[in-house]
Length: 367
Image (cartoon, rainbow, N blue to C red; front, side, top):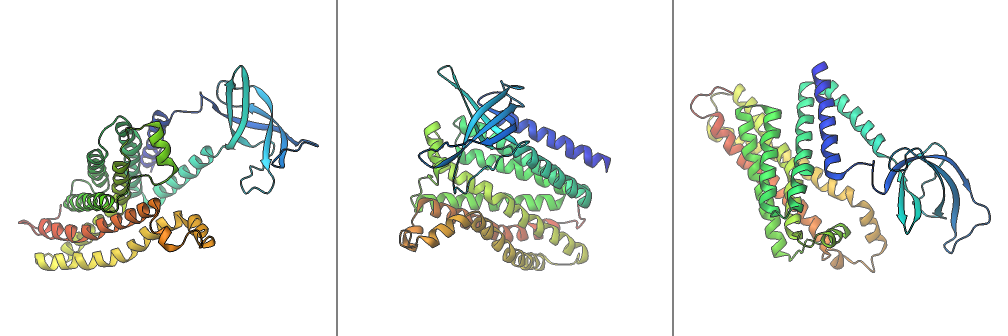
């Protein structure tokens, strides 16, 4: 148990270090963490937008102005859904910017990252406590995956590397390391690795073909436009396909490991199975898995877009179905879902076939 705790803590520390390396910290720049010491609504002050004006005293906890107190005006629009509802003692993310020898100070957000980290640590310890060694292995695989995406992929994509080959290489490394961490140097790991890699490559091929077939440009939202402004050399269509590959990776790996593990148990219970019978069993298992995984994948995308779905439903005259189904970012999300399903479905026969070959090859000892 002590070793598991040490592994979890070490993984969190290493992951945090990578995040700070990629995105920077809060100790410099225009952002700082601050505590609200005093807040009061200003009297008889009105703006053109009928904003409420508050007099707020902040004490900076980090940044270039650490330890200093500043009194500022904070505006909140009456009736707006997005209201901070500040009170003394709240920790906020403040913006401090110097413009023409004048200090501009504002409140951006409630400071949430510390609470999020606390929630994540709590959940990780619960996983380690309940799942034991397997839970710790899963967390290590997760840490490695995040490091590959944030620490490696983002760095080389911004450096101008071609997105598609880079993503396939990173996905292959993630599959290799993650499955070895979870399953070790076993036949099960080999089978699951081959099935996952094939499924992910096929999902990427489906996404790439769909992007060409549907004339998708890669502009799927404001963030892609902003990315193009910041770096005009970024291949947005390539980024789109890369996102499809990474998005499909987890689901395809789940299906492949489940089939490989099930086939191992079947082989142990029935060592006289033929390759045809083993393959048939793998296909039957895969069909049951895909039924639930289809719902999981589609519901994940639908849940993330629920607000948008409600907007479309309320404005049917402006957004009829023919308009919605031809919008670039809607088509992009549909392609993401279909590519993920395509990779998952084809990973089933591949994993079942590879499993029937490897488990029943020559000596029937399970490794």
